[in-house]
View 1 (cartoon, helix red, strand yellow):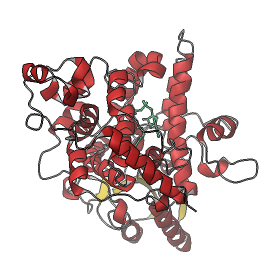
View 2 (cartoon, helix red, strand yellow):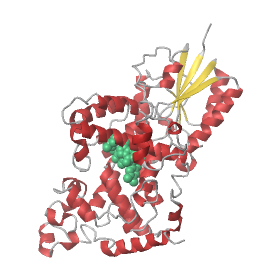
View 3 (cartoon, protein in one colour):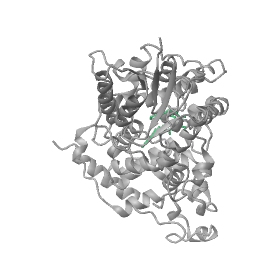
View 4 (cartoon, protein in one colour):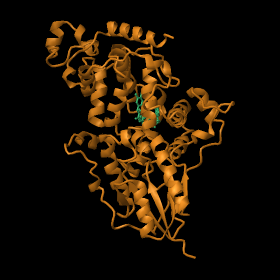
Length: 475
Ligand SMILES: Cc1cc2nc3c(=O)[nH]c(=O)nc-3n(C[C@H](O)[C@H](O)[C@H](O)COP(=O)(O)OP(=O)(O)OC[C@H]3O[C@@H](n4cnc5c(N)ncnc54)[C@H](O)[C@@H]3O)c2cc1C
């Protein structure tokens, strides 16, 4: 008996390898692989500019792997699916699960529609190592602290599934009435992305190469090296993982193949626990769907944030007068990425030294990061602000001068992104306002002209922050 056509709906799983939904669809006579840009249901969480750049290239790469037979649409997904059901002998629709609240709502609605039409449909887990609903405390409530969540919850739960083998599909069906990648209009009109283009290779192939390189060159010294932004010890897999060009199961198990390398265990465990932080972010978003916009700890609703457009703009442009902060913000602008150490430093500076609401930082990252991810971005910002689950305490304020001296002692990273300071001796690189006049002159710097004066005083702004924090404790 004919099994008809099955739709595989690509979402955050832009890969052919280890893709459970696609494998299921391949059991049918023909597979119709579709991607739908959904700017309607996403509303305030529409993809940002850097993510759109990434998506454009990732779709191109996926389309090539599918012999140019990826059917693409720019409409409300329910309408797309409705039309496809009317047009073709579609027997089933499959997808891999996403966890953003708006996607969950949309998918529930589409599932109900398909059930009503008696069309087989099923969703799979191809994005996470552990489903958020499978991990809970002994009393059945969700964890709020990372270490017990990961060590007691995840590591004692069923092991993540092994990735599946490569899939060869030769029954792909293409809908000639679909849109083209170009008509999705994902690339910005102004070419601000030329540098981003030099750094990244979106797509499944690029993801595997990035992982191979990290496992060969970065992993062994990951535990230590991951703190230093000029070192090549972090994987830079985050955008590939976000778009699902490689599954977390692949990363987990391929990393584990290095277990026998002498002296690697601590770094390996640390790397796996960072994948655990990704899981924890999704877990929090699933159990606390207001995470992207509301303080996880309600006492922060009393925090007296300051609206200051000029400070915010200086921060966004990397012109705060604090070199390590400016280097991080410029790395973000130029490459669509920022090293984790810097995400913490620039985040702390925004919310604690400038007293600007963490949601402003979250929005800027959302637009600029190629790895912008609703779960990790909101969990990361709430962690930095001190308002989150298991967050850095608000009173722990990163000092941008000591952070620079400690984590970029030779100034390699800072001078790369703030080249106007490259002739300044390291002693004054992170605090140029304290350099004697003749040293500044010799380095060719006039503060306020070649490089900004600090926009706030560290000591004074720290006191203001602690005072403001005191307000959250008022009953
Ligand atoms: C304010 C702030 C905002 C952030 N926004 C995002 C975001 O939008 N998207 C995003 O993917 N990550 C975000 N992070 C987390 C982290 O900074 C990045 O995942 C990491 O820097 C990516 O680089 P990597 O792939 O080289 O990481 P590696 O150190 O190589 O880690 C491997 C993988 O583990 C995961 N991971 C590592 N650290 C974290 C973490 N702290 N939280 C969650 N997952 C983690 C990522 O998927 C990462 O690719 C944010 C952190 C902060 C403090």
